[in-house]
Image (cartoon, rainbow, N blue to C red; front, side):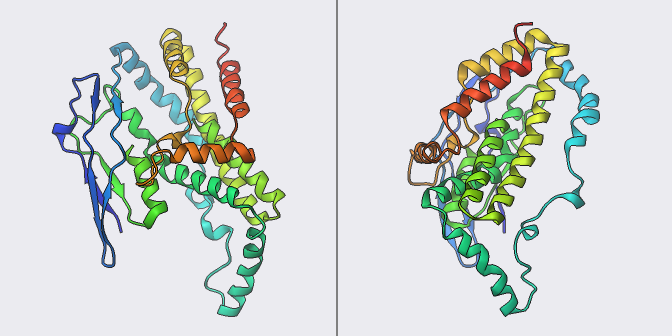
Amino acid sequence: MQVSHCLPTKCLPWKSRVHRLPPTTLTARFSSISAAVTASPPRHQKTCSMHPREARSVQINGKWATTNVLPLLKPVKDCWQPQTFLPDPSLPSEEFNDEVKPPREHTAELPNEYFVVLVGDMITEVASPTYQTMINTLDGVRDETGASCSPVLDMFMMEMTVQYLIGAGMRATFLSQGNTARLAKEGGDPVLARICGTIAADEKRHKLAYSWIVGKLLEIDPTGAMLAVSDMMNKRITMPAHLIFDGEDPRLFDHFSAVAQRIGVYTAEDYADIVEALNERGDWRN
């Protein structure tokens, strides 16, 4: 079941370059659960304006994106589903239980730190469709009416954390999922390794799409693209989950990040590699 919460227009003062959204209380009502969910701490949101010339460049890129970027998407019939990797629940009870035992035994060998990172990765992936809200802060595409909605799912602590992240760098998620798959394989869980590896492959396609888009922007508007990259680098590239919040621990991402670094899922070296790859891809010196 899904409940939607809409921000009223008065909460979206678009004329201001920097504004603070008021804290919101989102309430989800279910037949068996009735709870109030407190929003994550308010943060500054910066809206960005584009010169008409830049807006035209984005519009011109529409046809190019349709031809070059959309083919990266898999046909729906070829997309994987959880049941692709898990036992068939329609099997007879005894047979299904026999199918479930091996994955459980393999998982039992993995350390607790691994599951901390696995859950963090999962939360990032579930919330990733809402990252487009950043694009909606740009002139010409943002919602001036305040009618854009954010879903709220009441599925206890882990799902609450997903929603806090929604309320609040694909190469990074590709590396993180790939390393999670490697650790699962080393820990003796081939099914979990395959799941994480499949997600990593999806993230790699996302990375390719963003790389091609930036390359095209450099081609049609090199000055604007350079200024945008400079602004991004000055602000630093942060993991999408840096706003993760479970309603209790304001330093949840710090703890998640520390565990991820300790077991080698995402480290400072990975961050440096991302920056190097970005510079090489853009060939900014030329």
